[in-house]
Length: 477
Picture 1 (cartoon, rainbow, N blue to C red):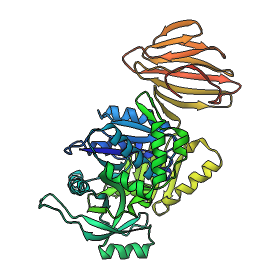
Picture 2 (cartoon, rainbow, N blue to C red):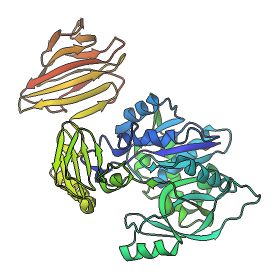
Picture 3 (tube, rainbow, N blue to C red):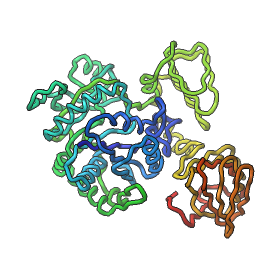
Picture 4 (tube, rainbow, N blue to C red):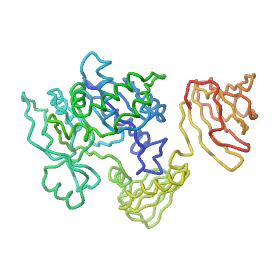
């Protein structure tokens, strides 16, 4: 019995402007028709003994995570909300405590980041079979990626002596002890590692028994275990989610599972494999993993090219045209355009830090925001008005609320709206509208079977998002 533990936190700043704080890379369709989170789950569905996942994510992403699981018919064993980020060791500890508490058996935990790409899934499954065998022998197994190039952006793991299987099984691949972890090397060192054949990239994926990893954490990181246990005990269920206690979890030391456990334990093992793995940590990584045209370009969206080679071009909201480019990244969204040589994409993080210092909204969200009830997209904005396209899912509704400084005008484009306006309840269909004066309590609901679409015009002396009083609702946003 294996329980996937999907680590779905993080913001993916190196993939700005596509990845934002409220819409990070693991929730975006970067390659193919599914998001990174969905692909992580779908590549596990045919592996025997795989159970429903435990997903650990940021509180602000909870509804998007739940919706993405629902859309691929993936029921979770729990969506656990981290009130603050504390790295991977506390996340693994929480999952182990939860699994032992809720399962009659002592399950294996397969820890996977939600934003990795694996091209050859059958080869990944063979590595999983080997890891499963040795995890059942009480080893803490990590997956090492056989390097294809001298990468300087990954940590490395040196192979130790081979792990010996107690029985012969043709399905078992190579498994070794971990000799040591090494930090990201310079180019010369990475080239030496590649030539030696003794090193693998550190993938950040693990498989171990819940009780085994918890016992090692009790030995090497007792403060983490204590804080995590308290945050679970004092946490609360909220709809389909479990909220860890904020004060207890914030007091937890932040550390990676590598530093906290794997570098100290004598139970560490590694299964090397080569299946087209990529952590998609930069635009260069996306170019490497993407399907290329005859000129070695990776293209997504409405893109027109002439004399362009070895480049990545992504059009999000309009036609993107390029002439005479080579080895470049061009990414267009509704509110930002990134242009960079491929060999400079690691510096995107510097741009994001500058934007954060300037308190620019472009680091936090897109013009289109996904909400638990649907979505809201800014079409036009000035000092005294904002025009939005709003979509409300069937059966969903926006919280009962009021504003002190702004009025709202709703114009129905598609579907049926049930509107609460003060003491009045009205039904609006296509091409009908209503006006909400400042200070009047109001709510919008979709009682129909198709998505409700409308244009919302906000006007007034102050249009900030903090001019809102929620009077009633099931959502905390």
